[in-house]
Each structure stands twice: as structure tokens, then as C-alpha cells.
Length: 336
Image (tube, rainbow, N blue to C red; front, side, top):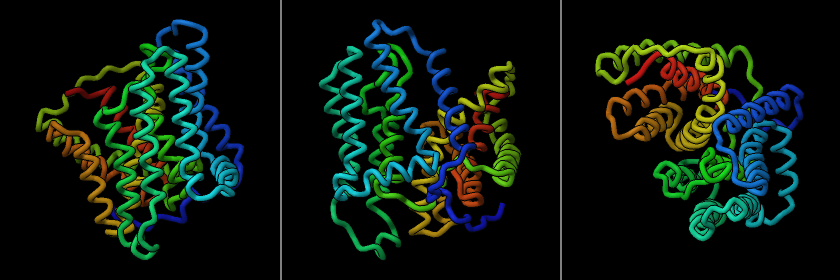
């Protein structure tokens, strides 16, 4: 697969699109349905309302920020604020909402308030500290990469208290809190170019995503079977065939592609170039699947496939299609 320069990024789109709004609405409806089918019944009406409001903020915020008009409107609202206030505005709202939800749902508030205050306020603080000039940042945006790691690693290492919605045994939304914070910082408060979070997908994007999936399968399946990491174990059902890819796309595909391709690979490419940026981001993606070295290898190869789609199309929502196809195929046909 040869890499071509990404087209002009869609993350600067400012207009409103009926198709984008429709897709975002369907995506949120799917997310709410998935939550309703998995979550236990809340202990009280207050807990139910608190959970619904908090889920709407984090899940709805994540999905809505894929609409160019929403990003532009939100950016216009905060554009008049001083830079520091603009950086801390979104994180402050998330922190207040997290604390209010924990209190209303009967979750232990002090440890959550302390942990999420540190987690949510450190990234904007790092971005607010005066840094190098634009020329130096263009060579290697170290500070932005550190911010990305500060947002990712506490989630990856499970350092934050759980936020089940509804409490006490519902769907844990702490990943969504980190995702919305990252999106606010890099799409609204201090926009990063070439992220490619857009619902404006065309047939060329779908074709690139499908080609990458087929090529990845041709490479990864022999390795997976030879190492014993995967086995043929089909578990087909209408839910796995139709529903699972859509849920995986929303829950895993887009969030991980935003992190590893839209942010990490994007930033690394600024300092290292397209090929090296793709390679390093793919290795990091592979290492995120430790401790099994077989899984690391297959994930790193997958990272190359996802990264190629991202470079080819300029859209993380396209590479997320490949990501969802890989994970859904694994769940439906393979095991290990």
C-alpha cells in the first residue's frame, strides 16, 4: 500500500450538513440503546436523571463534535475568552459534571473529585504554559504529545475511579470523559489541523477502508493462526453480524482512531514525516496491547493499515471503518 498525501482536512469544515446531523442523531440513538440494554436499573429516580444527563453530556458531546457546524459554533462561543479561560472552560464543565453525577448517584465523591481534578486540569495547564515558537513546534510538537499521553495513559492504566452510568453497575464512561476533554482541547480550544473527525464520508473513503481490511486480513490471519493467537471459532448471529460492527465503530473504532491517528500519528508526522510518523504510531498502538507479544505484533500491523487509511483519506472516521471491521470479524469468527 502506497501512502499519498492526505487531502485538505475536513476538521476545518464550518457549515451545517443535514446528513451530518442525521448521522450524529442515529449514532447517539445507537449509543443510548446500547447503554439501556447493558445498564442495570438505577436505585432511584434521582440517579436515573443524573445518569441520563451525564451520559448525554459525554456521549452526546463526543458524537456532536464530529459535526463541523457544532465545532465552529462552540469555537465561536469561546473565541472571545482569554486563551487560558478558553483552555480551561471545557475541562471545568466536565469536572463539575463528573462531581455532580458522582454526588447525585451515591458514588464516593472525594476520591473521584481529587482524581478527575488532576486528570482534567493538567492537560490544559500544560497547553497554557508558554512554549516554543511556532517553527520549533512544527518540527516536533513535544508539548502536545505529552498532553495526549496525559489524557491516554491514566485511562489505559486504569488510574481513575470508575464512573458507571447508571450507578452502581452501569456502563463505565470514564473513557468518554477523557475523549471529550481531548476533543474539546484539540478541536475547539486549540484546534489541531488534519485530525479528520468528520461524518462526511464518500465511497472513496469506504473503498480505502475496505481495501486496508482485506490486505490486513491477508497478512494477519496466517500469522495469527501460525502463532496460535487466533482460532476458527465462528459465533454468528444477527446481532454480531449487523449490530456489533456499528457498536464497535462508535465505542472503540472512532475513539481509538481519534487518539492514535488523529492526534498521535498526526503530531508525530509533523516532526518525523509521513512514513516515520505512521511507523512510530503503529508501534505505540501495538505496545498498547501488551503483555501478549503476538497481540502486540498483530495490533502494530493493524496500526499500519489504519494509519494508511487515515493518511490516504485524511479522516479518522474512515480508518475507524477498517478498525471496526477487524474487531467485528474477530468477535464473530475468531477466538484465541
